[in-house]
Length: 356
Image (cartoon, rainbow, N blue to C red):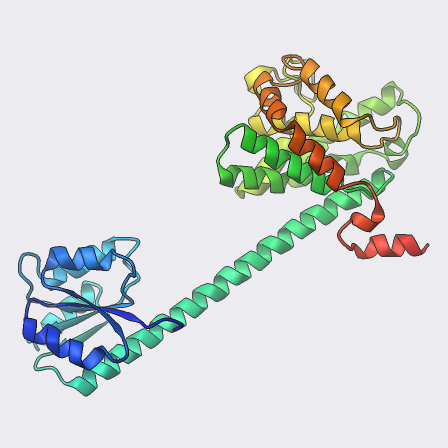
């Protein structure tokens, strides 16, 4: 352990407490308790103990009851408990183990046995912590890998549409800013931001010649484009995973309009899920301020005016009001992540493109 392990000694006998103090103080930090109430308080006070030496015959609640309550507390249940008692009957030891204890020390106390058993249990604590850290690190690595795959898939779609931009990273930033301005919880903000690159993934199902057409699309071509929300929802599929679930919602509903004239379902007002309403504003802002196949970008100031003008028509008024609070932050993101190959996070295929 990087710190001196903390041991809580809970015993109503001053002699026993002093004995443990003499044996353990050289190598460990010690906390003491004389009854059940003091034991609960000491166990739940920082620094939390790494190990509890618990007398069975305590005043008020006995050791078995104290151990059971400790194990019922999610914050404290991981702390190993060693019972200390003069009872040597196997039935008593079995009862202690059933209550959640990891070991049993009988009185009179033998210092070598105590030191060995304490060292063994603290070694197991070390191993558990190391394993938990490995699992946490692996989980973070898997999450990073998943996010990288999502971003790469979105970038692949951008290439197919006719360019390579920083739209993915801008979109993530815009969604986070707007979600925060709406007062959503931090975990929801994180999920929506991470899910946002997949909102237009349905364009993979639209013919490439339509996506890259420089002229205004005709009626048939627009009908093909209007299918991309449902195609995107189908590509993502239905999942219990919150990120993919919200990605599907965004893909399906980001072209719905507050006044009910959007597509594909012509949802109106509060029928449109909040992620779709957020994505609608972000998608419009990104589309207007980025070079498109049929128009040059407009200024961020003009894009802001158009979004505000569509409040209550194309966009949810509450989302537009939140957008108005973070306009400067949107402009900063737009200025930071320009559509230049050099600024696209050292993508291998970006470097290859530059060489051709």
